[in-house]
Image (cartoon, rainbow, N blue to C red):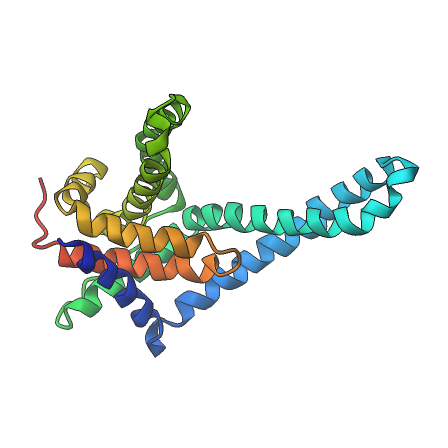
Length: 236
């Protein structure tokens, strides 16, 4: 699969989510994401800031009008990113159904269904991904510390970030199809340019605070389309 085809898969997912039968998949993660953010602000961040503010020396009281808004802004950004990761795990059964519907939409005659599995199965699958990603992330971190080689670090981080997103979202439909994780990786490696292009789009859109909740289902739909366009589905 060519690089441009991977870009097309992501935008095809975006267009698909704009259709009437798919719009509900945008609403649920957006509502849950906002609940997580405002809950975190009200029950964790707010009380913590209230405790820290009085500890400022009296001669720095004037800074509170600047620091408090900044702390809330940083908290919103961190909560948005953290909530996005948490949602992608909690909502895996729901997102599995979306991936199957997106895949079926590519072949109108298909009426395959997916039960979405369980949260426990989703967590087990996520654990496999973490075990796969962590050693590579550690290797990239070490490369970033080596003089000379670290000039390549930005490119390597961007490339691996795109690859991680491709693995994360294309694997949902692979799980629906009953493939194990190694086979899912093998298919993606065989279509690496397209997978990287798709992952790059997902990475950039999911990095935008508050917008990222809407982009999770877009990336799931696009990942299912990516799987469909990679060719015949055969199990090993």
